[in-house]
Amino acid sequence: MSLVKTSLLNGIAVVVKVASALVLNKILAVYVGPAGYAIIGQFQNAVSIVVSLAGGVVATGVTKATAQHFDDEARQHAVWQTAIRFSLGASLIAGVSLLFIGDSLAQWLLHREDMATVFVWLALALPAMAANNLLLAIINGKKEVGLYVVANIIGSLIVLLATGFLAVNFGLYGALTAFVVTPALTLLATGAFVARRGWFNARFLWGGMDKLATRELACFGLMALTSALAIPVTHMLIRDHLVDTFGLAAAGYWQATWKISEIYLMLATTTLSVYYLPRLAEIRTAPELKAEIIKVYRFVLPLAVAGAVMIFLSRDFIIYTLFAQDFAPMRELFPWQLTGDVIKIGSWILAYIMLGRVMVKFYVITEVGFSISFFLLTLVFVSVWGLPGVTIAYAVNYGLYWGCMVFICRHEMRRMEVNHG
Image (tube, rainbow, N blue to C red; front, side):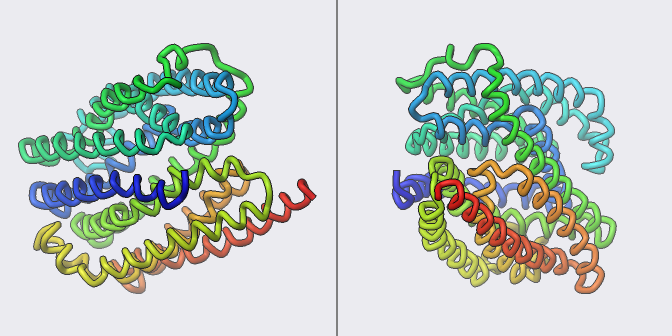
Protein backbone atom coordinates (compact mmCIF):
# COMPACT_ATOMS: atom_id res chain seq x y z
CA MET A 1 0.00 0.00 0.00
CA SER A 2 1.31 3.48 -0.87
CA LEU A 3 2.65 5.97 1.65
CA VAL A 4 -0.16 8.45 1.00
CA LYS A 5 -2.96 5.86 1.19
CA THR A 6 -1.45 4.34 4.32
CA SER A 7 -1.23 7.77 5.93
CA LEU A 8 -4.81 8.66 4.99
CA LEU A 9 -6.19 5.43 6.44
CA ASN A 10 -3.95 5.74 9.45
CA GLY A 11 -5.03 9.36 9.76
CA ILE A 12 -8.56 8.19 10.55
CA ALA A 13 -7.27 6.26 13.55
CA VAL A 14 -5.07 9.19 14.54
CA VAL A 15 -8.01 11.62 14.45
CA VAL A 16 -10.00 9.36 16.76
CA LYS A 17 -6.99 8.84 19.01
CA VAL A 18 -6.22 12.56 19.14
CA ALA A 19 -9.84 13.45 19.90
CA SER A 20 -9.95 10.80 22.62
CA ALA A 21 -6.65 11.95 24.08
CA LEU A 22 -7.74 15.59 24.15
CA VAL A 23 -10.97 14.76 25.96
CA LEU A 24 -9.09 12.50 28.34
CA ASN A 25 -6.47 15.18 28.99
CA LYS A 26 -9.21 17.58 30.05
CA ILE A 27 -10.69 15.00 32.41
CA LEU A 28 -7.31 14.23 33.96
CA ALA A 29 -6.38 17.91 34.23
CA VAL A 30 -9.57 18.61 36.18
CA TYR A 31 -9.57 15.53 38.38
CA VAL A 32 -5.86 14.95 39.14
CA GLY A 33 -4.17 18.35 38.54
CA PRO A 34 -0.51 19.06 37.63
CA ALA A 35 0.89 16.98 40.50
CA GLY A 36 -1.28 14.02 39.53
CA TYR A 37 -0.19 14.46 35.93
CA ALA A 38 3.44 14.04 36.98
CA ILE A 39 2.57 10.84 38.86
CA ILE A 40 0.69 9.52 35.81
CA GLY A 41 3.78 10.18 33.70
CA GLN A 42 5.95 8.20 36.10
CA PHE A 43 3.50 5.31 36.13
CA GLN A 44 3.14 5.23 32.34
CA ASN A 45 6.92 5.03 32.00
CA ALA A 46 6.98 2.18 34.51
CA VAL A 47 4.21 0.36 32.61
CA SER A 48 6.13 0.81 29.38
CA ILE A 49 9.21 -0.81 30.88
CA VAL A 50 7.30 -3.71 32.42
CA VAL A 51 5.28 -4.42 29.26
CA SER A 52 8.46 -4.44 27.22
CA LEU A 53 10.14 -6.83 29.63
CA ALA A 54 7.00 -8.99 29.48
CA GLY A 55 7.40 -9.70 25.79
CA GLY A 56 6.74 -6.33 24.21
CA VAL A 57 10.36 -6.19 23.10
CA VAL A 58 9.69 -8.73 20.33
CA ALA A 59 6.70 -6.91 18.80
CA THR A 60 8.80 -4.89 16.35
CA GLY A 61 10.63 -8.06 15.38
CA VAL A 62 7.32 -9.80 14.70
CA THR A 63 6.25 -6.95 12.40
CA LYS A 64 9.53 -6.98 10.52
CA ALA A 65 9.75 -10.79 10.21
CA THR A 66 6.10 -11.10 9.15
CA ALA A 67 6.64 -8.52 6.41
CA GLN A 68 9.96 -10.00 5.35
CA HIS A 69 8.57 -13.55 5.03
CA PHE A 70 5.47 -12.41 3.13
CA ASP A 71 5.87 -15.36 0.75
CA ASP A 72 6.50 -18.03 3.41
CA GLU A 73 3.60 -18.57 5.80
CA ALA A 74 5.38 -21.41 7.59
CA ARG A 75 8.19 -19.03 8.60
CA GLN A 76 5.64 -16.44 9.69
CA HIS A 77 3.87 -18.97 11.90
CA ALA A 78 7.17 -20.06 13.43
CA VAL A 79 7.90 -16.45 14.33
CA TRP A 80 4.44 -15.96 15.85
CA GLN A 81 4.67 -19.14 17.91
CA THR A 82 8.11 -18.29 19.21
CA ALA A 83 7.01 -14.76 20.11
CA ILE A 84 3.86 -15.84 21.96
CA ARG A 85 5.73 -18.47 23.96
CA PHE A 86 8.37 -15.98 24.97
CA SER A 87 5.82 -13.27 25.80
CA LEU A 88 3.66 -15.46 28.02
CA GLY A 89 6.67 -16.76 29.91
CA ALA A 90 8.12 -13.29 30.37
CA SER A 91 4.71 -11.96 31.45
CA LEU A 92 4.48 -14.58 34.17
CA ILE A 93 7.94 -13.77 35.52
CA ALA A 94 7.36 -10.00 35.38
CA GLY A 95 3.92 -10.33 36.98
CA VAL A 96 5.14 -12.37 39.92
CA SER A 97 8.01 -9.93 40.43
CA LEU A 98 5.58 -7.00 40.54
CA LEU A 99 3.58 -8.65 43.30
CA PHE A 100 6.69 -8.64 45.48
CA ILE A 101 8.06 -5.16 44.72
CA GLY A 102 4.84 -3.20 44.11
CA ASP A 103 4.99 -1.43 47.48
CA SER A 104 8.55 -0.24 46.90
CA LEU A 105 7.75 0.91 43.37
CA ALA A 106 4.75 2.91 44.59
CA GLN A 107 6.86 4.71 47.17
CA TRP A 108 9.78 5.38 44.81
CA LEU A 109 8.01 6.20 41.53
CA LEU A 110 4.63 7.53 42.59
CA HIS A 111 5.54 9.04 45.96
CA ARG A 112 2.28 7.46 47.16
CA GLU A 113 2.36 4.20 49.15
CA ASP A 114 -1.44 4.02 49.00
CA MET A 115 -1.19 3.44 45.23
CA ALA A 116 0.68 0.13 45.54
CA THR A 117 -2.26 -2.01 44.38
CA VAL A 118 -2.13 -0.51 40.89
CA PHE A 119 0.94 -2.68 40.38
CA VAL A 120 -1.18 -5.71 41.27
CA TRP A 121 -3.58 -4.75 38.49
CA LEU A 122 -0.60 -4.39 36.17
CA ALA A 123 0.68 -7.86 37.06
CA LEU A 124 -2.71 -9.43 36.34
CA ALA A 125 -3.14 -7.59 33.03
CA LEU A 126 0.32 -8.30 31.61
CA PRO A 127 -0.43 -11.50 29.63
CA ALA A 128 -3.40 -9.88 27.87
CA MET A 129 -1.42 -6.72 27.14
CA ALA A 130 1.44 -8.76 25.67
CA ALA A 131 -0.94 -10.83 23.53
CA ASN A 132 -2.66 -7.71 22.20
CA ASN A 133 0.67 -6.13 21.26
CA LEU A 134 1.68 -9.25 19.34
CA LEU A 135 -1.60 -9.42 17.43
CA LEU A 136 -1.23 -5.78 16.42
CA ALA A 137 2.37 -6.47 15.36
CA ILE A 138 1.19 -9.38 13.19
CA ILE A 139 -1.54 -7.22 11.60
CA ASN A 140 1.03 -4.53 10.89
CA GLY A 141 3.47 -7.02 9.38
CA LYS A 142 0.70 -8.41 7.17
CA LYS A 143 0.11 -4.83 5.95
CA GLU A 144 -3.56 -5.08 6.88
CA VAL A 145 -3.76 -1.31 7.29
CA GLY A 146 -7.56 -1.18 7.33
CA LEU A 147 -7.74 -3.78 10.08
CA TYR A 148 -4.93 -2.04 11.96
CA VAL A 149 -6.85 1.24 11.78
CA VAL A 150 -10.08 -0.29 13.07
CA ALA A 151 -8.30 -2.06 15.93
CA ASN A 152 -6.64 1.17 16.99
CA ILE A 153 -9.89 3.12 16.80
CA ILE A 154 -11.65 0.59 19.03
CA GLY A 155 -8.69 0.67 21.41
CA SER A 156 -8.79 4.48 21.62
CA LEU A 157 -12.50 4.50 22.41
CA ILE A 158 -12.09 1.84 25.10
CA VAL A 159 -9.27 3.84 26.70
CA LEU A 160 -11.34 7.03 26.64
CA LEU A 161 -14.48 5.51 28.14
CA ALA A 162 -12.79 3.36 30.78
CA THR A 163 -10.17 5.89 31.86
CA GLY A 164 -12.68 8.74 31.89
CA PHE A 165 -15.10 6.75 34.03
CA LEU A 166 -12.48 5.54 36.50
CA ALA A 167 -10.77 8.94 36.78
CA VAL A 168 -14.03 10.79 37.42
CA ASN A 169 -15.20 8.30 40.02
CA PHE A 170 -11.92 7.28 41.68
CA GLY A 171 -9.55 10.14 40.94
CA LEU A 172 -5.84 9.46 40.49
CA TYR A 173 -6.11 5.83 41.58
CA GLY A 174 -8.81 5.19 38.98
CA ALA A 175 -6.73 6.82 36.25
CA LEU A 176 -3.68 4.72 37.08
CA THR A 177 -5.74 1.52 37.17
CA ALA A 178 -7.30 2.34 33.81
CA PHE A 179 -3.89 2.65 32.16
CA VAL A 180 -3.23 -1.04 32.76
CA VAL A 181 -6.75 -2.45 32.47
CA THR A 182 -7.79 -0.83 29.17
CA PRO A 183 -4.93 -2.23 27.03
CA ALA A 184 -5.88 -5.69 28.24
CA LEU A 185 -9.53 -5.09 27.36
CA THR A 186 -8.63 -4.15 23.79
CA LEU A 187 -7.39 -7.71 23.27
CA LEU A 188 -11.01 -8.81 22.97
CA ALA A 189 -11.64 -6.41 20.09
CA THR A 190 -8.31 -7.11 18.36
CA GLY A 191 -8.80 -10.87 18.64
CA ALA A 192 -12.33 -10.68 17.26
CA PHE A 193 -11.22 -8.69 14.21
CA VAL A 194 -8.14 -10.74 13.34
CA ALA A 195 -10.02 -14.03 13.74
CA ARG A 196 -12.08 -13.13 10.66
CA ARG A 197 -9.04 -12.97 8.39
CA GLY A 198 -8.39 -15.96 6.14
CA TRP A 199 -4.66 -15.91 6.82
CA PHE A 200 -5.17 -16.23 10.59
CA ASN A 201 -6.04 -19.16 12.82
CA ALA A 202 -5.52 -19.41 16.55
CA ARG A 203 -3.54 -22.62 16.09
CA PHE A 204 -0.91 -20.62 14.18
CA LEU A 205 0.02 -19.00 17.50
CA TRP A 206 0.78 -22.16 19.40
CA GLY A 207 3.81 -24.36 18.86
CA GLY A 208 7.39 -24.91 19.91
CA MET A 209 10.21 -22.37 20.04
CA ASP A 210 11.87 -22.19 16.62
CA LYS A 211 15.65 -21.64 16.68
CA LEU A 212 15.80 -19.55 13.53
CA ALA A 213 12.84 -17.44 14.64
CA THR A 214 14.43 -17.00 18.05
CA ARG A 215 17.60 -15.63 16.43
CA GLU A 216 15.52 -13.28 14.26
CA LEU A 217 13.57 -11.96 17.22
CA ALA A 218 16.61 -11.78 19.50
CA CYS A 219 18.16 -8.95 17.47
CA PHE A 220 14.97 -6.91 17.58
CA GLY A 221 14.43 -7.90 21.19
CA LEU A 222 17.77 -6.43 22.16
CA MET A 223 17.04 -3.20 20.30
CA ALA A 224 13.53 -2.92 21.71
CA LEU A 225 14.74 -3.72 25.22
CA THR A 226 17.32 -0.96 24.93
CA SER A 227 14.63 1.58 24.03
CA ALA A 228 12.22 0.15 26.60
CA LEU A 229 14.73 0.74 29.36
CA ALA A 230 16.75 3.75 28.21
CA ILE A 231 13.96 6.15 27.23
CA PRO A 232 11.45 5.62 30.09
CA VAL A 233 14.22 5.45 32.71
CA THR A 234 15.66 8.70 31.37
CA HIS A 235 12.25 10.37 31.57
CA MET A 236 11.72 9.12 35.11
CA LEU A 237 15.13 10.44 36.19
CA ILE A 238 14.43 13.80 34.54
CA ARG A 239 10.99 13.97 36.15
CA ASP A 240 12.49 13.15 39.55
CA HIS A 241 15.07 15.91 39.07
CA LEU A 242 12.34 18.39 38.21
CA VAL A 243 10.35 17.31 41.27
CA ASP A 244 13.40 17.76 43.53
CA THR A 245 14.28 21.11 41.96
CA PHE A 246 10.91 22.77 41.33
CA GLY A 247 8.26 20.52 42.89
CA LEU A 248 5.73 17.96 41.70
CA ALA A 249 3.56 20.53 39.89
CA ALA A 250 6.47 21.70 37.70
CA ALA A 251 7.13 18.12 36.66
CA GLY A 252 3.44 17.96 35.75
CA TYR A 253 3.82 20.99 33.45
CA TRP A 254 6.60 19.23 31.54
CA GLN A 255 4.58 16.00 31.40
CA ALA A 256 1.56 17.89 30.01
CA THR A 257 3.73 19.54 27.35
CA TRP A 258 5.23 16.20 26.42
CA LYS A 259 1.74 14.72 26.12
CA ILE A 260 0.74 17.45 23.66
CA SER A 261 3.78 16.55 21.56
CA GLU A 262 2.80 12.87 21.58
CA ILE A 263 -0.72 13.67 20.49
CA TYR A 264 -0.04 15.94 17.53
CA LEU A 265 2.89 13.85 16.26
CA MET A 266 0.81 10.68 16.15
CA LEU A 267 0.21 10.87 12.40
CA ALA A 268 3.93 11.14 11.70
CA THR A 269 5.07 8.48 14.17
CA THR A 270 2.38 5.94 13.34
CA THR A 271 3.01 6.38 9.61
CA LEU A 272 6.64 5.49 10.27
CA SER A 273 5.59 2.36 12.16
CA VAL A 274 2.75 1.22 9.90
CA TYR A 275 4.22 1.99 6.46
CA TYR A 276 7.92 2.78 6.77
CA LEU A 277 9.22 -0.05 8.96
CA PRO A 278 7.72 -2.92 6.90
CA ARG A 279 8.84 -1.13 3.73
CA LEU A 280 12.44 -0.88 4.96
CA ALA A 281 12.43 -4.63 5.58
CA GLU A 282 11.78 -5.21 1.87
CA ILE A 283 14.44 -2.90 0.44
CA ARG A 284 17.57 -4.53 -0.99
CA THR A 285 19.54 -1.77 -2.76
CA ALA A 286 21.02 1.60 -1.74
CA PRO A 287 19.28 3.64 -4.49
CA GLU A 288 15.93 2.16 -3.46
CA LEU A 289 16.62 3.01 0.18
CA LYS A 290 17.63 6.58 -0.70
CA ALA A 291 14.48 7.08 -2.78
CA GLU A 292 12.30 5.81 0.07
CA ILE A 293 13.97 8.11 2.59
CA ILE A 294 13.44 11.14 0.36
CA LYS A 295 9.80 10.21 -0.21
CA VAL A 296 9.13 9.87 3.51
CA TYR A 297 10.95 13.13 4.30
CA ARG A 298 8.87 15.01 1.74
CA PHE A 299 5.65 13.74 3.25
CA VAL A 300 6.27 13.38 6.99
CA LEU A 301 8.55 16.29 7.88
CA PRO A 302 6.19 19.02 6.53
CA LEU A 303 3.42 17.45 8.61
CA ALA A 304 5.57 17.76 11.72
CA VAL A 305 6.46 21.39 10.94
CA ALA A 306 2.85 22.33 10.21
CA GLY A 307 1.69 20.65 13.39
CA ALA A 308 4.32 22.42 15.49
CA VAL A 309 3.38 25.83 14.07
CA MET A 310 -0.33 25.22 14.70
CA ILE A 311 0.31 24.08 18.26
CA PHE A 312 2.50 27.10 18.98
CA LEU A 313 -0.08 29.56 17.67
CA SER A 314 -2.88 27.89 19.64
CA ARG A 315 -0.89 27.21 22.82
CA ASP A 316 -3.04 29.44 25.03
CA PHE A 317 -6.23 27.81 23.75
CA ILE A 318 -4.70 24.38 24.40
CA ILE A 319 -3.69 25.20 27.96
CA TYR A 320 -6.93 26.79 29.09
CA THR A 321 -9.37 24.68 27.08
CA LEU A 322 -7.76 21.25 26.99
CA PHE A 323 -6.11 21.42 30.39
CA ALA A 324 -6.92 23.87 33.17
CA GLN A 325 -5.89 27.21 34.67
CA ASP A 326 -3.46 25.39 36.97
CA PHE A 327 -1.37 24.42 33.93
CA ALA A 328 -0.71 28.03 32.79
CA PRO A 329 3.07 27.92 33.59
CA MET A 330 3.58 25.26 30.89
CA ARG A 331 3.24 28.04 28.26
CA GLU A 332 6.95 28.87 28.52
CA LEU A 333 7.88 25.30 27.57
CA PHE A 334 6.26 25.31 24.12
CA PRO A 335 8.89 27.03 21.89
CA TRP A 336 11.79 24.67 22.49
CA GLN A 337 9.58 21.61 22.97
CA LEU A 338 8.00 22.10 19.53
CA THR A 339 11.40 22.77 17.97
CA GLY A 340 12.62 19.53 19.47
CA ASP A 341 9.58 17.68 18.10
CA VAL A 342 10.38 18.64 14.52
CA ILE A 343 14.04 17.75 14.94
CA LYS A 344 13.05 14.41 16.50
CA ILE A 345 10.84 13.43 13.57
CA GLY A 346 13.62 14.38 11.16
CA SER A 347 16.06 12.17 13.01
CA TRP A 348 13.61 9.28 13.40
CA ILE A 349 13.13 8.97 9.64
CA LEU A 350 16.78 7.97 9.48
CA ALA A 351 16.82 6.13 12.81
CA TYR A 352 14.16 3.69 11.59
CA ILE A 353 16.75 2.40 9.14
CA MET A 354 18.58 0.85 12.10
CA LEU A 355 15.41 -1.09 12.93
CA GLY A 356 14.51 -2.03 9.38
CA ARG A 357 18.08 -3.07 8.56
CA VAL A 358 18.63 -4.74 11.99
CA MET A 359 21.67 -2.62 12.84
CA VAL A 360 21.84 -3.80 16.44
CA LYS A 361 25.21 -2.38 17.48
CA PHE A 362 24.53 1.13 16.19
CA TYR A 363 21.02 1.12 17.64
CA VAL A 364 22.02 0.08 21.15
CA ILE A 365 24.96 2.49 21.33
CA THR A 366 22.96 5.48 20.10
CA GLU A 367 19.88 4.78 22.23
CA VAL A 368 21.90 4.48 25.42
CA GLY A 369 24.31 7.26 24.57
CA PHE A 370 21.70 9.86 23.65
CA SER A 371 19.45 8.92 26.57
CA ILE A 372 22.34 9.64 28.90
CA SER A 373 23.16 12.87 27.08
CA PHE A 374 19.51 14.02 27.35
CA PHE A 375 19.62 13.58 31.11
CA LEU A 376 23.02 15.27 31.46
CA LEU A 377 22.02 18.17 29.21
CA THR A 378 18.86 18.58 31.29
CA LEU A 379 20.89 18.85 34.49
CA VAL A 380 23.08 21.55 32.95
CA PHE A 381 20.40 23.52 31.11
CA VAL A 382 17.89 23.45 33.97
CA SER A 383 20.54 24.92 36.28
CA VAL A 384 21.01 27.79 33.79
CA TRP A 385 17.53 28.43 32.32
CA GLY A 386 15.22 26.91 34.92
CA LEU A 387 12.30 24.68 33.90
CA PRO A 388 12.53 25.60 30.15
CA GLY A 389 16.00 24.09 30.26
CA VAL A 390 14.53 20.60 29.98
CA THR A 391 12.94 21.46 26.61
CA ILE A 392 16.13 23.15 25.38
CA ALA A 393 18.02 19.97 26.29
CA TYR A 394 15.43 17.97 24.36
CA ALA A 395 15.92 20.00 21.16
CA VAL A 396 19.72 20.09 21.39
CA ASN A 397 19.94 16.38 22.11
CA TYR A 398 17.85 15.44 19.08
CA GLY A 399 19.86 17.83 16.92
CA LEU A 400 22.98 15.88 17.84
CA TYR A 401 21.12 12.61 17.31
CA TRP A 402 20.03 13.67 13.82
CA GLY A 403 23.63 14.39 12.85
CA CYS A 404 24.64 10.97 14.11
CA MET A 405 21.83 9.32 12.10
CA VAL A 406 23.08 10.98 8.89
CA PHE A 407 26.47 9.39 9.44
CA ILE A 408 25.00 5.95 10.15
CA CYS A 409 22.65 6.13 7.16
CA ARG A 410 25.51 6.94 4.80
CA HIS A 411 27.51 4.06 6.27
CA GLU A 412 24.64 1.63 5.62
CA MET A 413 24.20 2.82 2.04
CA ARG A 414 27.89 2.35 1.31
CA ARG A 415 27.68 -1.17 2.75
CA MET A 416 24.65 -1.97 0.57
CA GLU A 417 26.44 -0.66 -2.52
CA VAL A 418 29.41 -2.94 -1.83
CA ASN A 419 27.21 -5.98 -1.21
CA HIS A 420 25.19 -5.43 -4.36
CA GLY A 421 27.98 -3.99 -6.47
